[in-house]
Length: 324
Image 1 (cartoon, one colour):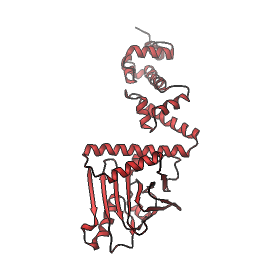
Image 2 (cartoon, helix red, strand yellow):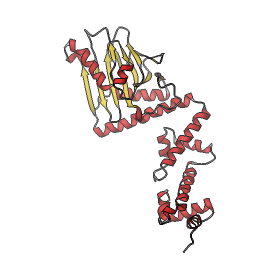
Image 3 (cartoon, one colour):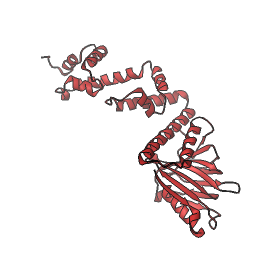
Image 4 (cartoon, helix red, strand yellow):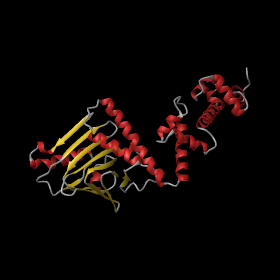
């Protein structure tokens, strides 16, 4: 695991705030940072590189920060900050909304919209853990609050608690991991963040709207992976952050099963290929294998059941050729 550690006490007092601020700029994005403790600044920062994302733990005196339109125009890494206070509290003012979170809560902020952050603690030091995720890897679902506003997530139970436990565990763990372990942890973290957002979306949308949107996403995913022999209910469910049981219930509402839907879509793709004159020289078994039927006999039986004739007869009929 690639780790960067900053300890202010290792520097002269007059250099501590500036160096801490510079590291925050490099790891996060440029902010205007103000504090009444520049002359006696005591701060730490620990950065963990998990490949696809970064986890940061920091401590500092109470301060204000601002991500202004000018700074966004100058540099925007297009990331989401998922922040959990470990000590003290965090306030965010974004799009004229104020969000305040304390220990056991999470706030999600995007770097592409202006905001002001306030870190405070009664007579002491503020500390927090943050996960920094590229926006391209964690698309905020449509309908999940306004992306210009900070999102507060309760963390006392359920998915919020699970995510916060994972994040704080990473932030406070002193174990030395290898590069391959770090990459795997990054993938797990990304999947967990996606599952958290999917859970929040399920809570915000009416059940019918969410189920319809989920069904559309699942159908699109299946269509995009029909040639993949590893297209299984488990893989489909994992890609959409739901259980296999929930996936089966989704298709039950459509009066079908996951396997039947996949088989029907594969047969339809094979039927189109058999009717395509440009593919007339491609063997039937090759078309069948491309669409997930490695055994010709199984393909012939399924095709006959669906279309009333063997695939070879259909090809001759569709292309206006005679059998030889």
